[in-house]
Image (cartoon, rainbow, N blue to C red; front, side, top):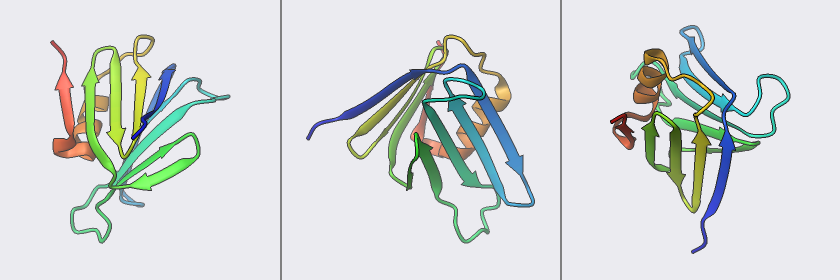
Length: 116
């Protein structure tokens, strides 16, 4: 089985919490306005919600509940699912606690954090 790999350097990270629409979201893109590469992760906030799946969108492709593993370090964020690996270079952005908390909330035990 061949592995498709998407790699890009993030220039922008966006977080969103919408209680009215019941979701928490984190997005990474190579540019703030004219982006070629992007990744969006989203999950419902309330566990009583009918749909508590993980929504993943990357460059126009969409899937739910397919992530096998995600790894976060100071300089890289990697998502592995099906036969795909997405590697986001975080060298040009700063990871604050809010972003890390959102990723933990969305990905749960699928996220491995390596900040050492």
